[in-house]
Amino acid sequence: GTAGGEGTSAWEVQCTSCGQAFRDARSYEAHYNAVHLYQCESCEKSFGSARLLEIHIEERHDSFFAARRAKLVREASEGGHGAGRCEGLFRCLAEGCEERFWSPGLRRTHLIRCHAFPENFYIPGIE
Image (cartoon, rainbow, N blue to C red; front, side, top):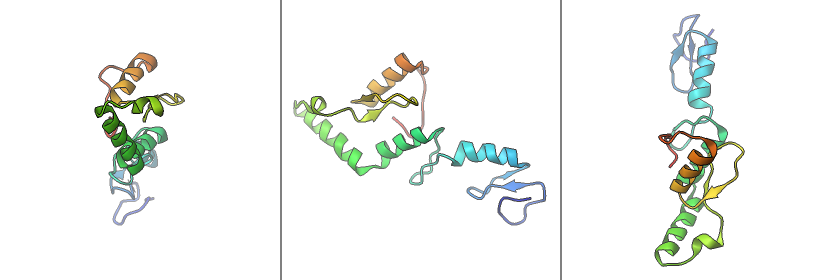
């Protein structure tokens, strides 16, 4: 059977999101879970978990987050103490960790030291 799309053979499953064809439902399900399950509707980047998608949306597409970040940068450049008055903006990427950081760099250091992320880790769409 097919999962959408015209002209597919009886043994082919076609992804309704991107049109890619698969020989069986298991392959299609693996594709969907890897590419479309946690996909940003704004920029179409895909993430491995709901948490990473949520953090991406907050940091890349949320105007309130952008305003808070701009305010902290402005206060820091003016010699203010903005960082001392509120919690960090950047949430830890590790599941279950609720730590927040003032910069993506501090978060990265935390992930490597405390959660054993490899030093060269990279998650597209997240600083």
